[in-house]
Amino acid sequence: RSRVPPLADRLSIKLRRLRVQRQAVDRRLPGSVNLPVLFVSAAVANRVSNRVLLAPLLRHTYLLALTTTVAQLVVYLTWLKRRCRKGLVQDSMWSFAKRNPALITAFGMCEGAFFPLVFYSAARLPGSLVQVLNQTLIPSTVLLSCLFLRRRYDILQITGVAVVLAGVAAFTSFPRTSGSVAVVALCIAAYGLQAGAMVLKEVVFSRYQKNPAGSCAGHANDGIGGDRCLPFDPALFLTAGTGCRLLVQFLAWPVFQQLTQGLSLRSCFAAGFQAMQQPSVLPLVVFYIAANVALSITALLLVQKTSAAATVLANVVALPLSALVFCLPLPLLEQQAFHWQFALSLVLIVLGNLLYSHRSLRE
Image (tube, rainbow, N blue to C red; front, side, top):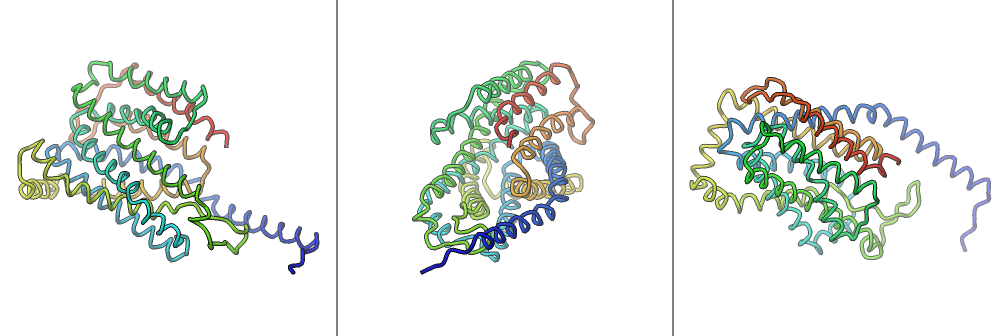
């Protein structure tokens, strides 16, 4: 029979656990303070360099989408390898992924369609307009999460969604910033696909957590904190999902090229590769890939090592900064004039984001 430890021993164990947790927080604090700044910098650099690069690669946006997918897959594979070595990826997680290929495939299909479509439409729209249209993610996510996750939102969150939509409408109604209606609709549809991918990701994580007996049986954590079931590993999910995305993009490439340009896959690849090798374009490609990889890494670290409020604020700050950069002289792009309707729309979008995320800001 197991003997219950005395009160003094239990208090000693709790104090030891608190001391270890405090030391861990102290070790993370300097990096946690710098992470939001690094994330915002990487986000702005990624968005701006992407739009600048789309100018010379106007007819080769699909190849750029494939290049982005390959770069992200390399990052996620490296991250997954490190987490496997640390024993953070349990056998039950691999089993769950094998039992639910449809969810991971659907995630890959949504993202596999999102990147080519958003690159194609963004190359034909003003850079600041693309940043504003990005915010249609919020109402799309709310709608899909209500349908598939049965999630309910409070009045402040609904108000935030309405304010964001008002900001998007205020900006798109301005004549000098609007693009083709069809291209704008295509861009909004692409962000709807990304919202679908985000909701599918939540479905995977919630289903894994709702089945602890089948997913986590026999996986006791004998360290500090007691027995517990680890959540589904994000590195495993992102690696599998990005692998599916790459496969989807390879399979859809010939169809996309025939619909948009009427050229064969071989000639499109040769022309796109040659365009990327141009002396004025190659440095932009390298910078964009570096910024994209930096964004992927800092986004993962931001979620892991900072609070939910810091993550929300970092994303909110990155939006107006990215949009305002396009009012500056940039290579290969026409400088966009700053106007007060533009500023008003950004204020509305930022305010809507803060209202929508008010629960996370309170944590």
